[in-house]
Length: 140
Image (cartoon, rainbow, N blue to C red; front, side):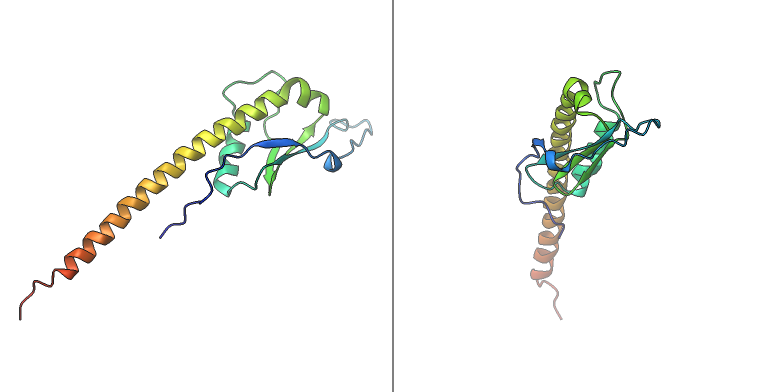
């Protein structure tokens, strides 16, 4: 039988994990003023949720001209934006981040519903097979 996640609690952003924000290099090279900002989640999402989220971040349904596709990753119970600043998060990325998490939760819920439906159909097929076997209507 396929395993369906038992917790239906949605993934939410709890805040910035300040002690894990990296320090910018500031060496004058391109991108040296940018750094990694980790956002703590209420739980570690599944791999499927992570994949959906990355797709949502890379191609959000709405975004500013300051959007940076390709900088997001999910590790355990954190979303990392690697290549931004706290000012950019405040002014641009925050709203996109919240929208992408909400959109991901919605799509993930639909995925789980589809998996449950497939699992129910499979279970019904197995029950029907077992009923067929239990009829014991073959005479010798």
